[in-house]
Image (cartoon, rainbow over all chains, first blue to last red):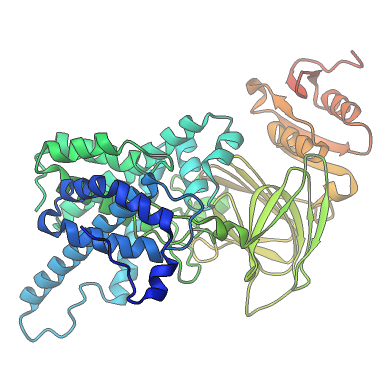
Length: 187
Length: 323
């Protein structure tokens, strides 16, 4: 598949980072495999094209690597999944309210903040059940933005021990959200 | 439609989602093998990843600095009981709302922050653009954005602040994942590991302003350890007394005193766990050499202080005069 630059014109062509292009070409097969593994099927090539455009437009990252490209591909897959879910929700709302419904946004502002408060309470419970250390680590990392290395120093733990605490927290958050969505019939 | 009877598949999907948050994740081959192993896996993975993203978004918010509602009972707090529910926490200025599962933080984002740091045992005075003055104790890290200097993060350490009044833009300090809003003017705040200590000299500080909104007035102190908070009294004249070489305590937790001492002297001091419920009352003068101060403290407190390779260790037992 030929990689096409995001903008037309020779001016844009000149500004493409050759090393970026080379990295992309080298890993193209792997990225395609990944997109297909995630269920993209016939759309895999289109998504690859979209990824190429995004990567060119992304802010300068210090070290562009295969891992970086795969992460971007991963994010793209999730964006698609998210849009698909929203579309389904809108369709559902439309059918429920009948063809005269004007507001197809399933979550108007007032309701959104109510939902937010509830979800905060839930997540608060999840964090507390993790135990004080794990709770402290995930808060410091996600809310205060303290990097893992520094947390390792502060907590007197190895980097991998900090990672394990974080993983435990992420998993619990995801699980709690899924359980909630199942109970509420969102899934 | 997700098949929720596929528990094993969902469990492995959750494991993958958690693992892939690691900044150095590189196990893509294994991940793809797993995705391809079962037609249900891609959908399960995406559901789990979106769920995690949704769950995390409860904490992250970029628009405005909403502080999230509190589940704890304020009455419980004021009476001094240990609240059973936890505290909410604010949005970190440095965190962008993650739409994607991976937060792609670019190095540039960090460069935009102003960071004030002190080495252990050192002190530093800072004056902000709005006239607010801060005295930083040793081993302290304070961070703020160029564009938003009325909200600062105390990552660790201790600071005494005299805040310039501005009703339009209240001054807030974030410590231990909680917001402390100045309601004019002088207070001291310290953070280490799980503990946040606030003492107010003048005016008041609102803790968790958009949530529990607990007001700590001059002459009061709040101590937060993990999810438990308690309120006590303090002599306004002693707030931030470390600035002039004095630490004054009335029935304070001994490990907390040692922690303050360690920070102010710039010397690592360990406390033996069996002292964790001990209390201390007294005045410590920081003017002498650290060794002298620590030994004097040990005597006053009726504990034993011994030098170690990296610093000092305090344990139970009578204090000795000299070694």
